[in-house]
Length: 165
Image (cartoon, one colour):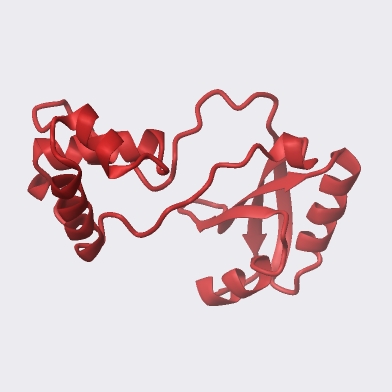
């Protein structure tokens, strides 16, 4: 999907839905100066084009008892496929995200845990995976910026807004 194919109304609709995915078509329409049926047609097209993939809820991890967060860098032995890594880390409910990366580290996982002891247990289990040579963890002190995954800033920026290249 080419982000340049999004017109200013599509971008405005996406901004409104990124703030509140439960907003009605009428509420979004009032914000972007369109009728509810016009907003619905545009949202349907955005879904068909794969720009909108679904609707979600944002939870507060601390309210659910997950008070500790860390990024765990995983160094793999030999050549480990991304599929092998994915299969392993998908089994951990504490893993929020997992990404293969460039550089010395092979895999970075974001982990949420109840407390430091729980985090230590998760890191120990990750380190015991057969393909793991070693791990390095960084505990999050404060989360300063959190943006919804579904809407990168450049996807809803105005067409003339500066973009990172």
